[in-house]
Image (cartoon, rainbow over all chains, first blue to last red; front, side, top):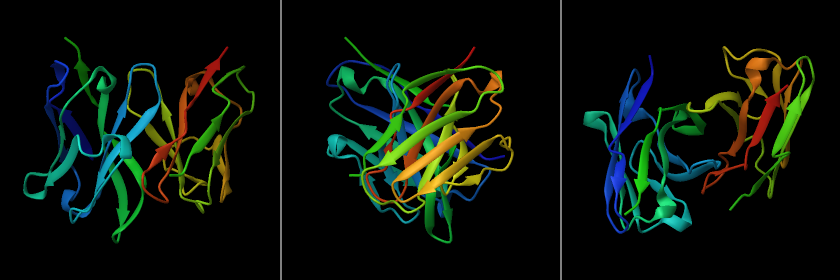
Amino acid sequence: EVQLVESGGGLVQPGGSLRLSCAASGFTFSKYSMNWVRQAPGKGLEWISYISSDGITYYTDSLKGRFTISRDNAKNSLYLQMNSLTAKDTAVYYCARERTIVEVDYGVDVWGQGTTVTVSS
Amino acid sequence: ETTLTQSPAFMSATPRDKVTISCKASQDIDDDLIWFQQKPGEAPILIIQEATSLVPGIPPRFSGSGYGTDFTLTINNVESEDAAFYFCQQHDNFPRTFGQGTKVEIK
């Protein structure tokens, strides 16, 4: 069974940092591109970042420079380093697999359950 | 950046109604559009891929149509279990973008 399990969320003070992790199982992680997506309370989905199977990254412009996506294929894990956090970063953060077929991406197909980040003093 | 304009933001339907949700892209994205269903407290579920292909395991009352800039999600004979948020997303280019979402209420 394909599974994505996020961890690392919690309460952090404004200006602080947090590193989210996503443990993947049930598929060959190294062959898939991955994404981070967030959802603020009562809001829609916001795409944050993407990393290809070979490490090419993309970010939404508003978060570029503060957030860094990375992966460790040997550990079947995806990460999101978040710095200089503000209240606007309060959200549920989802790890999401990209449907990748022969190195071509076809959009997100599997989501984790999410981890909650709350930025507050 | 490709903006996806989704409408309506909210709709109320009665069981067996036909529900139609629109997603308009600000530029041509071919058929690189997918639809998700999200119920409260749960992660989204992929229901339509490549604009028109039903994901295996999703009931056939769901269907998608469109190409280029105009896309539609249709739920025929809507059931109470279809009450949820529905989002579109484009994967034609970066940054990936989502529609604002549609809340479907079943009376």
